[in-house]
Image 1 (cartoon, one colour):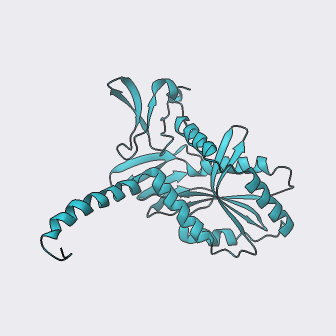
Image 2: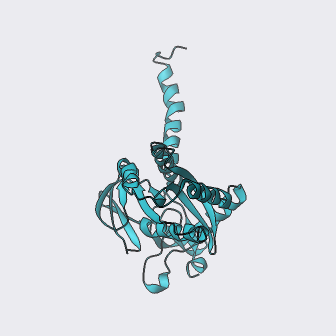
Image 3: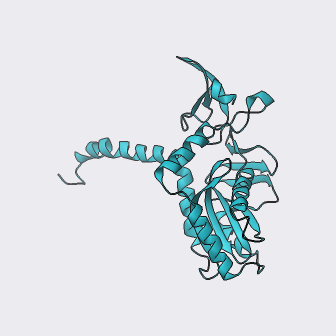
Length: 260
């Protein structure tokens, strides 16, 4: 049976179409999009001079309140650059102090957790971890790596596109850390990183069950998996909260958990 035969076309459609649809669905999952974005930034950071910068990716460090998953850390003579990666499309709107930012795709608006505040929590975790290593400066950066366009984004923290990331890191050019101290910071972070599957699964469970905003204060309840708004729904077994990003995100939450 030759590939070009007319009889083979229905067969190819029957086999190939479900595969393409499956790949498309997998790539649309928030967790997969996030991983793709982190991979692109890790590849971008390879462009930094290895003699002047130490790059660490996907760190899971212990904090007094649990664990903190940090996308990328760049150690330079200027200090520690803490990078939060987002992979979004559409128009992105947000301010430094807002609890939620907005992703606009045509007439659809999706709310997600403020990435600047997310990254500041990572900075606090690293400050605690490196508190006895002298005066170390921290430089938070939020980088968008998808096709999203930053609209009405008003922050003091740098919020940049992937193409601007290296320039943003390099322009901080003060000599504060010695090579020895840079090596000690790198070693401390690597020693404190949890790489076992059990710790990572526990971290994911904690994030999925954590409610970023309480409904009791009149503000919106946020999906801990993808950052979209949770809405009240009624199902076969009673009332619950479901993600407004359904069916792309199928996270649900019982009302008892939402009030904690």
